[in-house]
Image (tube, rainbow, N blue to C red; front, side, top):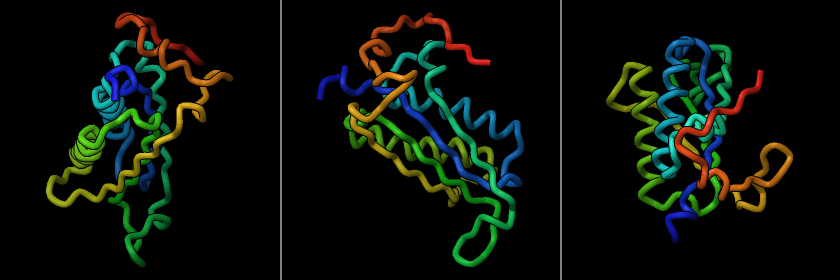
Length: 152
């Protein structure tokens, strides 16, 4: 697979009990994870490309997250959406390990880190942004100093 094909932008959804991580910890995770995902996908970390990495953080009440039959607040699930073929096996392994470590630092645990990670690969044909199919060539060709998108 060509190096050009390996360059895609991720979308990330994190699920966690609200009590597991405070706002500062969530912001830290999102910042680190955005940079790390771009690194795994070999994309430039320009303000523009970083602004196309969208992360949704879903928070749950402490009595709505379970391990087996026991309510818990210290487990996290992460879904990472990428263009199909954008990550080889080594990049997927790195993404899973690194994501787990990033979240583990904020959960203050380093042994058995309770994080589920699912990588969803979506065909390029089925990825849309801004009312159009994603133009990955434009993301690949963007300048390292391209300005971030602004939506407020």
